[in-house]
Length: 529
Image 1: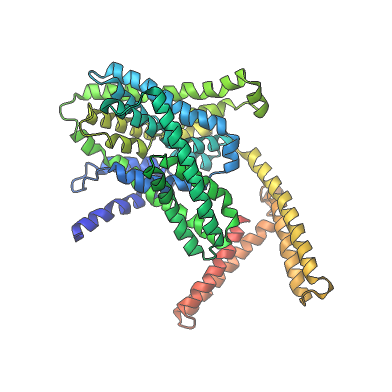
Image 2: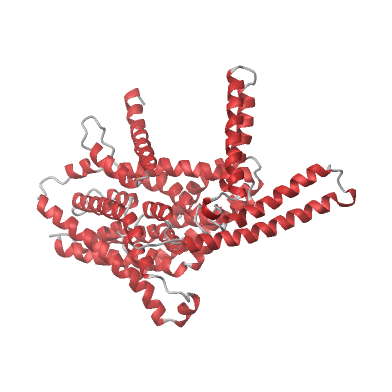
């Protein structure tokens, strides 16, 4: 690789990270800004053509992004929301595939029905990355977030299966409706089995690795191992990766504290880098896609794009309330399992969280070169993806605020539950301390015992104080918040001294790194409160 090629290779991640940093600084939607920046950059003279390689996206980018999202999800909450997640991840994807397919076949001359269904499968799966990020920041209720996360984890498997079936129908490789259904069930079942096998093996290894660096090095390989192992036997690599991520996320509490702390940092950085590159790549596809259209008339292209965009949005708006309300109306069991009906606000927000992402574009670029009207399908996919990212991305924060959705009650319930748990944990810790110091089992100075007892009691008190919102009457700080603020100031003063002593060559850099790490851990604990 020569220097020019290397610089071109580095230009994309460097530019994408720069835009993402700007978005985080200004508290803007990073995916939206990255797509817009990519659109603009695609027509800047001198910017290289970055063609989206579908194999790289599906093998290099998709597994770690899915794994990270699954790792950060909750197995218990996903299990509780299995019905709505399944209706969206399977039912809505298939419904979108069919409706978009028939509409595209009707409005686009000479487009075979199978090719239209391929387009429907391509644009069917939403990518909830940006919606979930916005929702978490603005207080979308936990169940709504769980449903969106679960949908985004599993819908790619449904869409890619439908996509392969539609492409196979044109190449003569399709096996009929029952055969396709059987292939999907077999691929999904094998994906679950392979995912569980790799999850169990990975969990066994990770629980026995005391070195956080080694443990997280293994963790970085896990999503690729799951995806490639499943795809090698024609199983669903997507489902295998998701199963591994959910399992290991549930078991992460059984690893060492160092592994957990480093894992959080590692996957946050990986998410930032991968998502920045992916969304920038989406925007950068505009110029090569337009160039491939040739003599297509702009008016017709705009009409096709607008109609299909509206169809994609409307299908979701019809499906979400229907799939939410009809099961409750028709089944006593559903009403018994879910006594509280979902709010209208949550249904509206879920209906509007339909941003599409890079999986759709990767599937479109993977169409065979001789596929009927391939360039047109690429353009329409691009238009739907970018349209949903811009329209939904710009309006989603406004809609959350306009509907007055709040998680204040959930946060209060969390704080109340944590306070009770902290008190029970402190009682257990104090009981263990008494066992170790009673009857001279350990020869410990009373001052040490008092310090340990005070620390355990203070953790429980912090949790109870947080129920008051962190401040006392008339804005007065609680002892816990005052303690944290003063201790942060003390830590800042300590750091200045250590850095000054290093600059004066009175301590070595290695000493500085060690003491700074200790201070950083303490500040991280203070931040948690």
